[in-house]
Length: 117
Image (cartoon, rainbow, N blue to C red; front, side, top):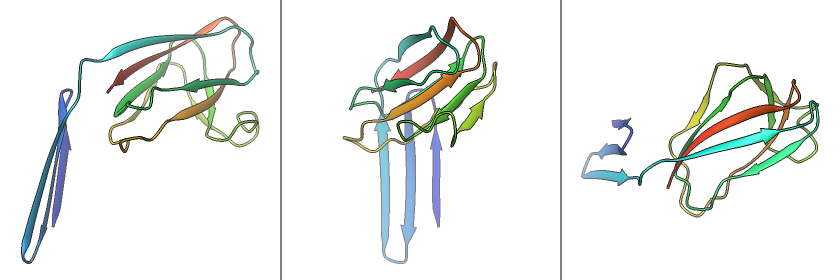
């Protein structure tokens, strides 16, 4: 049996086996707000979060985003993040650097992010 939950200030995971109980509580620091401008529509931009980022929320303020994980593919192999929606990751492993490649469908748009380390 396993159980996990998370909140704005930390996460808790619990794993039970027949002879072992593992409990992990991870706390995170204050959030940092990032505003990432995209000046040209349908051109790939690269956003790399700091190596100590443990979780993030990413939201396009005024456009639809095409998001990819491989350079050069944000126009062909991507997922769409519509205006007004958000994407979050809550369990980034220690030492992992997250890089996102994205295109906006609108020029002079803004992508908002909240990062926790």
